[in-house]
Structure formats: C-alpha cells, structure tokens
Image 1 (tube, rainbow, N blue to C red):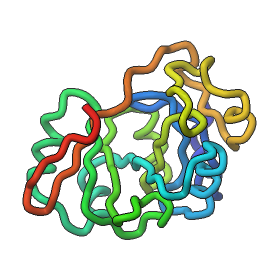
Image 2: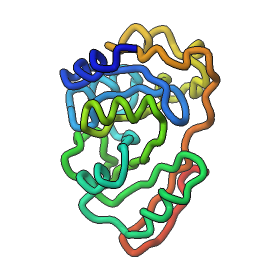
Image 3: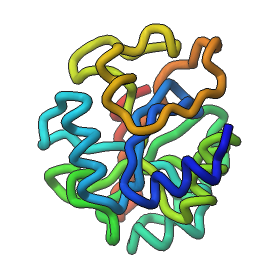
Length: 184
C-alpha cells in the first residue's frame, strides 16, 4: 500500500474506505468540512448525526478537545477493547463531525493502519462505518456496498479478507466525571 500517496490525497480532501480497529470505515481529514460533507453524502446520512474521530494519542486529543475530566486518561489507558469517549466540546474539527450539542466522539486508536494514516496526515481522521445510513454494518470488505466502493476516492487495500470485529464501545464523560454508556 502506498501510504504516502494516500496521505497526500487525504491532505487534498479525499475520502477513503479503510480497515479500522473495529469495522471497515469511511474516513477523511476530520478538520476538512468539505471532505466530511462528502462522507455524509456517500453514506446518505442525515446532517444531524455526528461522526467518530480517531486520534493517535493523548497529545492529539488534547489539541482538539479543550477541556475534559481527567478520568478519561485512565479509561482510555485501561480499555481492553476499542473505546470511543464522547467529549463535551472540540476545537479545530469540522462542524459536521460534531453532534448538535457540540460534543464529539473520539477514540485513541492502536491500529497500525489507522496510526500510519493519522501520523502521516498529522490530523485526526473520521471513522464511520462503511455502510449506507440505516443499513447493517459491513463486517468484511466483501459486504460493503458497491456504491460506497465507487464513490470514495481511495480504498486502503489491506486486510481485505478479514472479518472485522464489532463497533467500539461508546461512553459519554461529563466534565464532572459522570459516565453514561451509549453503546456497550
């Protein structure tokens, strides 16, 4: 896989289909509003629904999330499976990535493919399941709709024969430390 070429395309606003630490995902530069709008169109997703964002570590998280409860450090460090945390607010992220209330779901990924993309781009990437909104989540590349494969700019052709795991657990952490489980 020619990662430098993929990263250059992402820098120029490309959308991609790629394997993540959970399921096959649609992604782009999470700071590029136009690219994020294209992901919405590819998924046929309502603009009122937010996206999950992947970062490569706490330093990147802190750059985009101005304030959060310190318990998030422990939760992310101790998670034994992919964990998305909904943070109260974000800065520098495309508006269409955020929920209507301004919150944002972010996951610190350990996946080597995702890390190459994020570190090469030096920005967070969108990670939303590679399916038409409302359809069943594809667990393998073969299950992904032909229309999605045709509409993205780049397909990261790694792990094409693997069956992917289930989506991440999602929790919301308030500034006061209140925890709400959204998806287990």
